[in-house]
Length: 361
Image 1 (cartoon, rainbow, N blue to C red):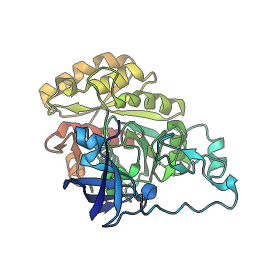
Image 2 (image 1 turned 90 degrees about the vertical axis):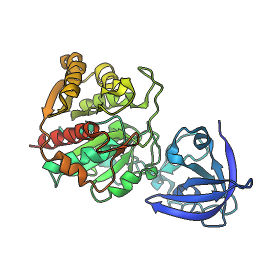
Image 3 (image 1 turned 60 degrees about the vertical axis):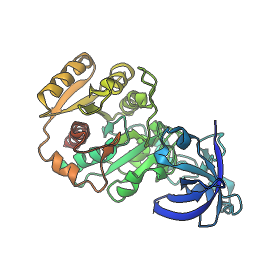
Image 4 (image 1 turned 135 degrees about the vertical axis):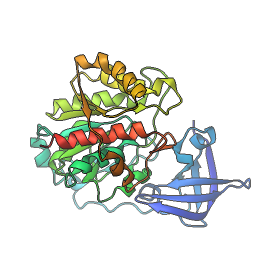
């Protein structure tokens, strides 16, 4: 459960869109690095007392090495401005029934200026949609799209398998201006648009953001238990189904690696094999980058053979993709490994982006 701590802000370190990184001194003389979301708790300043949820940090479970600020109890933020007519207010509650549940304007709510357009929308009109297991694939996929289609409008669908607040992602902050926008779906929040489901989010990406291509991936962080079904990336298969239901073109970004020390993630990760092989009921185009190391390439070919009955396995040339990846405006990192430390992983993601771009004709 929650491991509470109280402390005093001694320094505000880095800031990025929607987040502030703090140093917090504890009464016992210790110190914690903490992260605050000003839109939820207010804007911390040195000298503020803060209440922290430190559980994941203390247990070594991630959250980027941060305790999370729950409140500034002595300086609460003001209420948001009231709408003149309650019908004009957002009613979409996310992170529902948790202490910090935000109430937001959903893109397809009646008060939204986009309501009529989305009420009539039935299809994403053949839009290519790249689905990926990990948030770390996002900048690599985007690099692959823009390598061949530099003017393509690319939207990101932030699903709720990892970090719920879009503000946690420094990657998203660094991609400002490169994406047409972010739609946070399900329990995730903090995107440019809020949607209650992936389906409505995809429609918003197409008909509100005007996206040519969309990328669907969870936020930073990943829940995994080492079992076939117990991992948050299983939602990739459901994303394929949603894209197909709405008349899109699902493009599967495969999690490929010859650097991951865990056998279940070498070659094609068991996460990809389960999501695309067992969960995705609609066909997708699964992308394999050309020119893999021969041993790795043979492992990938063998692993994907059973999936070929449902999906189309597409080999995509990779000329120019390494340069595109190295030109990314944000650093590339997955499970602590950079581009050179897990080149095949990022190359596979970029190849999926390239394939989506080529589907634009």
